[in-house]
Length: 121
Image 1 (cartoon, rainbow, N blue to C red):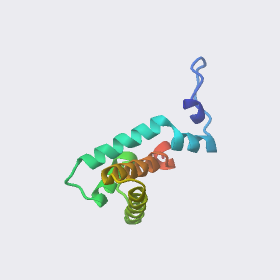
Image 2 (image 1 turned 60 degrees about the vertical axis):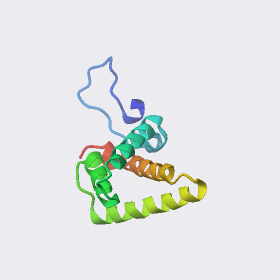
Image 3 (image 1 turned 30 degrees about the vertical axis):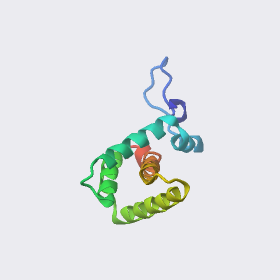
Image 4 (image 1 turned 45 degrees about the horizontal axis):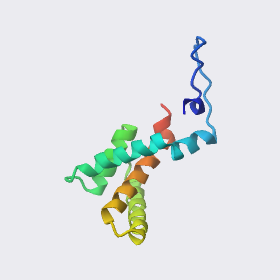
């Protein structure tokens, strides 16, 4: 995994590293079992707090992933995305809670695969 993100050669002293942005990095973040597992755990954490509504969960997810509040348009877009996923999973499965969990997991995966999560500013 670290090869895709220009990890330094551990046998050589390195004062600086090359920084590249290439498509395999994005593909790795979208398809890696490590990222998918982290997204599942983040989704479970968000859904565990029954006192929060979906907008508050999205806000909390942005704070956890990006250390900043979600913008209003990001919340609106995320709510629409989650609703679309829920409807899609509801037509494919009779278990509504499993569809809800999958939808939130995919949302969390999009946060973790975003450039804002990967690179420091």
